[in-house]
Length: 170
Image (cartoon, rainbow, N blue to C red; front, side, top):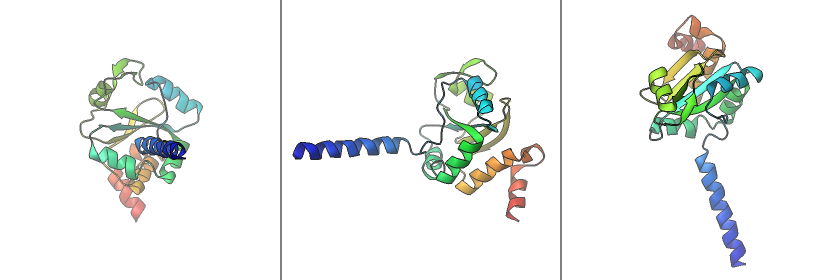
């Protein structure tokens, strides 16, 4: 009886540890750090772009985004329907291939190629791998969805997000 109880407790503890390690509930797509392949996959899956969440492990606002925004069912569904979604560490020395097919490391791609300083940086790339929309800092669920719609509607081509946001509220 005691052995069965301990086994059950162990399983529950392991389950909760796995759950807490994945606060975004499946928001991010898996990949092998080759963004040319990620673009090809986005195109073949009829996505409208690629979303990259640039983060730092010790960033409290990144953690807050993951805990309160990126794990919301409405957000997950909307982003899964429209984008391939990836998480990239600004302090990581993992090797990767950028959108142009060049070998680099995540830190260089973030800081040199995408000028990431403070985090989080929410970035939408078009299907050619060109950065289209970029926002630094924590945003709540509603503003995050609005930022995605701003990209999807192509409004970024003609107006700043702040103007777009004001028009949506009026």
